Length: 128
Length: 140
Image (cartoon, rainbow over all chains, first blue to last red; front, side, top):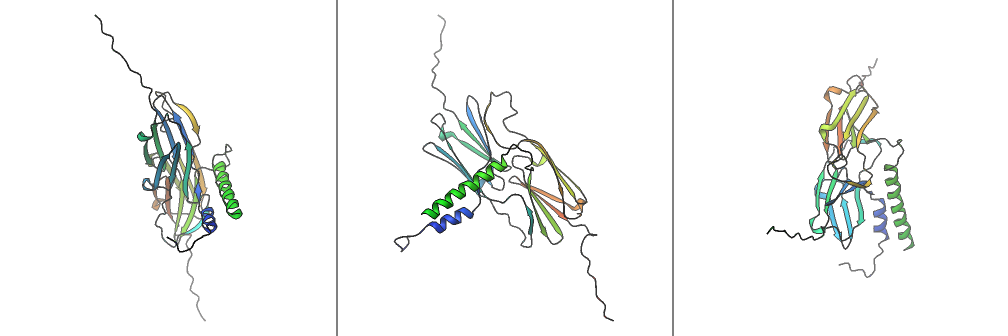
């Protein structure tokens, strides 16, 4: 706990501004059984990926893993800057949040969101 | 408080601009995006190619021209067996090719390439003929 009664957090906010955080590009598909979400997160490994559902908000985030590089490496030209990723989606109750599966491969996060199936009870008709 | 709000707005705008630039319909946005780094006698080229497998990546180097090509296969879009409906399609998929002019000639047969977490890293040694030669100054 801090000894100070009041702390101005605007300095922290400015740090957040200068930190690179990107909205990852996504593909979303749906079929009768599942919703599939793919997100581009180049530079992030599976350990840094976080998928969470709070109420009806699905949040995916991933931290960029800095690669250990020689100190003599000097940047000559850059079209992209490494950064973290974060994107949120509103989902409804048709998604079974307990069964969401996530896999990270080649810089893409693949999410499988199963849809709740309507309870249909089939009654076998026996011939008499 | 006011300052914080402005920063939040700018932060949001910065993200939106970056996002829109990447998802632009115009083809002037090159793919893949690259970085070029230099370390003494080596040149390192990095490229963001999320979703590709290393088997589908092709590299060609001749003197000072590097060509990166390949195909990003979609895990779902090609599947016609499943009745898939597309809700959002922002990720780059399909064939691509990019030719990069390097600042100097490199030894193509000593090039090394690694693909990890969607980032391709190519290490290229500078050609012997290009390296700076030390000239000794004789005193007379």
